[in-house]
Amino acid sequence: MCTEDADESRSAESLQFDFGTIRVATDDFSEANKLGQGGFGSVYRGKLPNGEEIAVKRLSMDSGQGDLEFKNDVLLMAMLQHRNLIRLLGFCLEGNERLLVYEYLPNISLDHIIFGMTDLCIFFNFKNLL
Ligand SMILES: Nc1ncnc2c1ncn2[C@@H]1O[C@H](COP(=O)(O)OP(=O)(O)OP(=O)(O)O)[C@@H](O)[C@H]1O
Image (cartoon, rainbow, N blue to C red; front, side):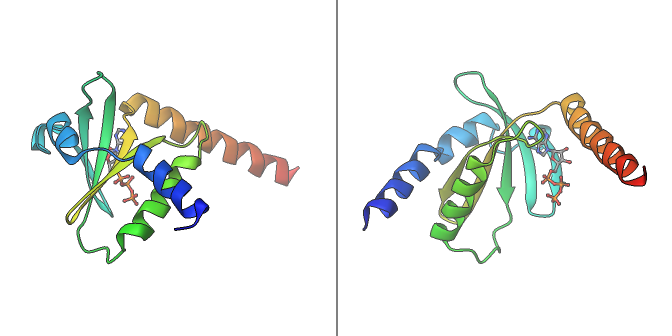
């Protein structure tokens, strides 16, 4: 393994959550904690032992993506940080299970982000018309 590969796998490890921790945090992915369903799987609300609230995306099991490919995608997503992007805190890989762990945003914050972006689009469209 070259130094770069070693560095990548080390940073991937720092983002890796233990499956048991997420299972407890989401009350075993209970229906009561289900926030919604997206194209890639269901999303559950959870609480980490340190009190931090999270949103866990449990990916459908038929993605066909390899473990390394998945870890690389997660690393890339974790590096993208912007005030209009929901922060990816990490991931979990166990057997066929693939989880993405995000910061939890209450509805009101999601609305703010969506409206914030809409305002920006309207602003730029107006500018282009002038
Ligand atoms: N970080 C989060 N905090 C709070 N709720 C969330 C969060 N992420 C997702 N959700 C909830 O889970 C639902 C599904 O989200 P998800 O991102 O899987 O799908 P989507 O936004 O519908 O689009 P797509 O499947 O195309 O990505 C959302 O509509 C939202 O209600």
